[in-house]
Image (tube, rainbow, N blue to C red):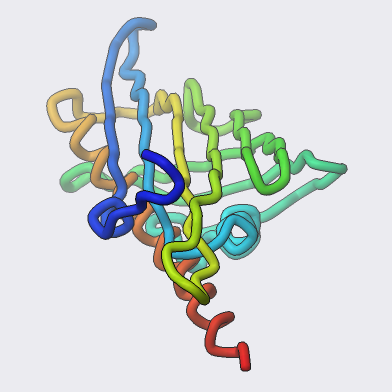
Length: 187
């Protein structure tokens, strides 16, 4: 897709793929997702890197806090939960985050109740569609997630995909909400 051909369907829903393997003897989820938001890269970046506010709008995230910061690196502690049918599992993570401003956010697990956890957010500006439009941002997400707790094998990929869809839709809504507010402030 080129920057000048953003269609309404692409903007509406994230495209998500989740694959589960057992290559290392435990369930390992490889996830990829892409979505286009109706906001420029600066607005998108601001929301994605406001780690202390993530719990305000990301479902199943109770707390997110930067515990140290130096240059383009952060240590972020996050607490949340996952629900699998009638099971609720707390998730506690300490993450190392490396930022390449306005382009990439790399995340890797320092400690927590995951065997493996790494993720990458990439932002690409898309061209404005009409006069007065600030543009769009193509956001890609890729991750490898291996919980250190029980995940139903039969439904694991579907549950992961559903959780990821809820998270991405919440992020998209937050980005676009702020973008609309910024537009209203203009003369």
